[in-house]
Image 1: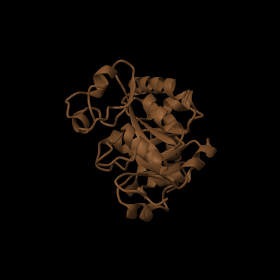
Image 2 (image 1 turned 180 degrees about the horizontal axis):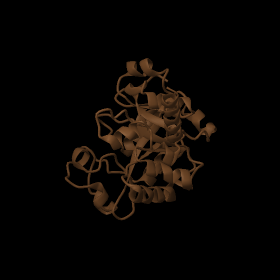
Image 3 (image 1 turned 45 degrees about the vertical axis):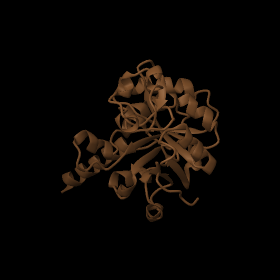
Image 4 (image 1 turned 90 degrees about the vertical axis):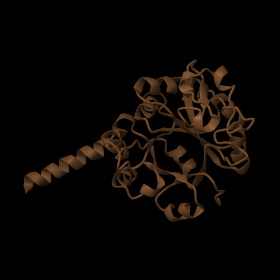
Length: 266
């Protein structure tokens, strides 16, 4: 019995060590408290997601903005969610294989809107609302390359921004190189996925990045690993609410709410 108890204690200690968050940057966390964050901008049928018009709409309505960034083949950084252009532009092209000149030839969802660069997004927002920037990458080399290029652009930005990613190496880069920037890990429970994703959902890769907030799929609020990470000091953010009533239902679990498809009451 004693051996079993000791084994459980050791296992719990290992789990805590792996998922333990950083407790720094408390001042920036206060900005996130009770905030509503427009998912890919405040987009609708008129303003495509991750477009300058969607970002302008969010600014006009006073909402923080979540957006996504990719690294292009020529080293440019653009704001775009998907790995390819099929859904948003109707083209069977991988965005990472294109140059900025090529990307600018396409339009978003049949509108006149181009895929914006990160710099264009920053120029428009101009510090009026906070930005939550998701790094879309895969693997250490690609993650580091995107972080380095993005940081070259963001280092001169005077507005408030935070970074997050599903990929721990992107968050790790910020831990090592820009610890002053509030950083977070994106995750879901991934109950039915393969082991690597299950470990990501259990936040076991926090050991690489020591995130300061955990951005979790909202319906998994009671996930034991998410709850433990928050109890250890991580700021809890939820994605993505598509009904106003769900934000009310889950508000006790989260400090910030990423939303789309409705206008929340502030």
